[in-house]
Image (cartoon, rainbow, N blue to C red; front, side):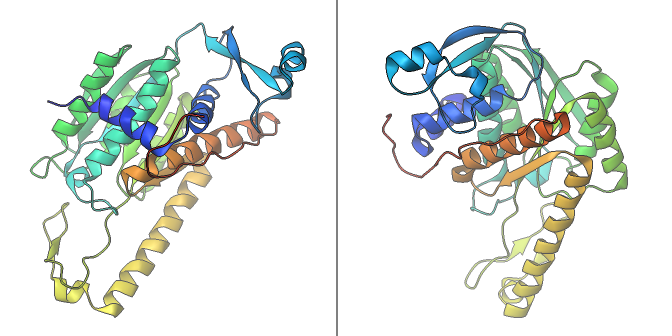
Length: 315
């Protein structure tokens, strides 16, 4: 079986320059506040870096700004909370399977955690139950987590119900950690919103949505709803009025979801294809840092990296 982590790493280097990956790594490093740090090395200054991190003596010798980079002494815990119900076996906006996009996002975040010496755990499942893999370090452990997600999200699996996984986390984990929730286009109801409020009070929470496919177009075969098996005949799905109404309903649903997460103070992002995962994760981490900085009275700005499809040369 092909190693999923190797596939994730390959896509990371296909879709991003080395500088962009460095910025993504820096955004991840800003997630945890108050950790003890040791000096690691120097790197070129990029917009958004703290001025206090500039090494002025090294800058004078080098002729351009250099900042100090640090590594964490104390490990942090990242808990991946994933919907592996049958909704995640459906198609995403890109035509890829949602679980493959979820694996890509989880693999990138898990790899960043591994680089920073943090431990990663997993809670996944559906409306019928949850499964926990305790936090550990190492690439072999991360590979196991990714394989678990891919193996569990199947069309004949249980119905999706991320609220069950959120409730499991709330009952099981009391120590503060970073929760990264990956689900499909869920609009949280009142009960789920209350769960998220309680989790947000105890942990740092990020939410990543794998976006749904659009209605089938002209010439496509009939589509069906994975959640309940209901069908949508291609002739009806191709009707311009139906497509326009479907599109408008999706826009309104997205606006309501964004409002829920704004109200909760939780950074939310998402992708509809694997090519979008890196830029969307960077935007998600940046959004989280900005909200955290506002809450502590600090200002935050960042140079947005450029991610593009096609082989990239390090430079």
